[in-house]
Image 1 (tube, rainbow, N blue to C red):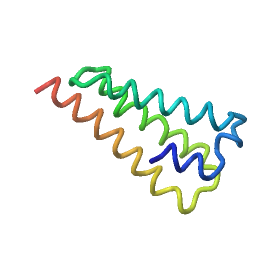
Image 2 (cartoon, one colour):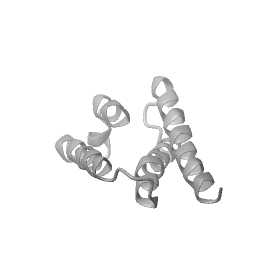
Image 3 (cartoon, helix red, strand yellow):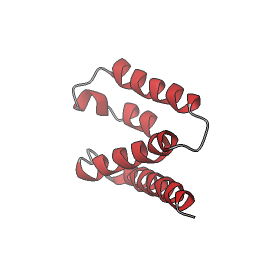
Length: 92
């Protein structure tokens, strides 16, 4: 969802990245994510760390802000909660 939002508002062009490279990167990420199907640190980093990093990037570099900020906040909450659940599972 977040990658689609970024493509629609022209973020790759603003960052100097060709849209097909940007979309291809997210497609590769989706394939990698599908390949890791157990509860490992790799899965936690892919499902929590990547969204958390993207969300924090958008807090610093919000581009257009406004309507898109709820998606940024949701990305941060989702990523942080995923990492927190992984840590809780490791230490329980």
